[in-house]
Image (cartoon, rainbow, N blue to C red; front, side, top):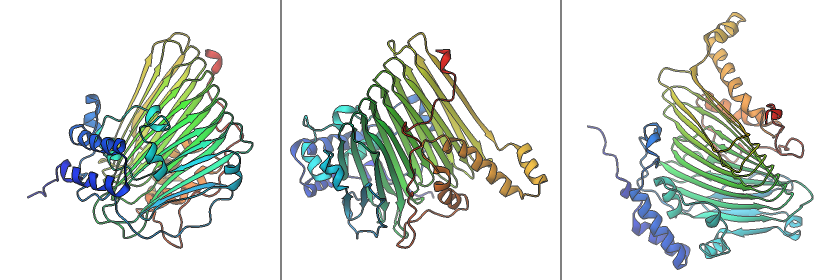
Length: 464
């Protein structure tokens, strides 16, 4: 007889949420928010849009025994990247290192405990900048919010700023819900990385990593936000990322999915400033029983804005992938350029991927295009490499890596492909990407290409 799957209310009880709230010393507003979010967690679906509920692939998720108040020792760390802001989340709590010159220049870092006390007030930024989530896992993330910070960067800071955020899951049934709000002032150049890993022997059932990122870009700000998701195969993850741009601001969302059991990524970007632009570049490698579910929503609400979304995934064994991109061009967004590109490569008969590009155009004088494909590896390319003496498995691997490299090479980060290759190689060979005292799979110092924090658009803007 098949094992009974626990009901959602058995994952996390209301009493456990109240206990967490008491342990953290929440005020009445945050306590009420947690309880309401728990109620929404019980009644909301995993996918709020009925058109996509058949593509979720979230079967097998059982977070029974989830512990949002788990404690453990602080994990060892390598030296920080020179001159960078470093934030670390693990079972011991959150640690932050900030350069003295940045603090002296007007930057403000608000840690989790202080931020919680302003939740729901006028001072709180994240709640006012994004709408509340409408799906079960995002509501769960709000109910157990236990890590986070708010960062405000001053206008016209003279040098590029590096923010490195590291999360390491190390305890059985661990639940980390991390929320960050970042305001990049006018003219600021920011390169932020969110890196997620697991320590060995930390699993005892499924674990949850929830991430919410709210960015606000001032005029002429340039931000690159890179995510590397490489926990072990016991991790269930939900990402919610949002951004609002000022005039002529440039934003690059980068995301690389390598690990995890079930992963949801939701990106919401609104180009509100004239002349602003965004690139959303995502890659996935899925094997075994992994699944990745990605959604990118981009709203053009001002003139002369550019938006581009490129997603590529490689899936083998019984892995699943789903990507959908929605671009909405509002009535006042003339001279908009928008591109959606979603492509997947299947390396086995059991793998599957769905790609769903959507354009909603409410304005004339725009250019909007999309492309999509799901196909097995090209046998002619495999035959060509075999005819040059390469074994078939190596030929397929080379083709798959090249397929993903198309996206990585477009990223405005020098050497990103080479930096991610060890992690991708480990996953391709069936090995986990683990955190250990003598092996830190962190990104090295990687400069942003030029000062624009994004490459030039590679399609004909004269067609506007």
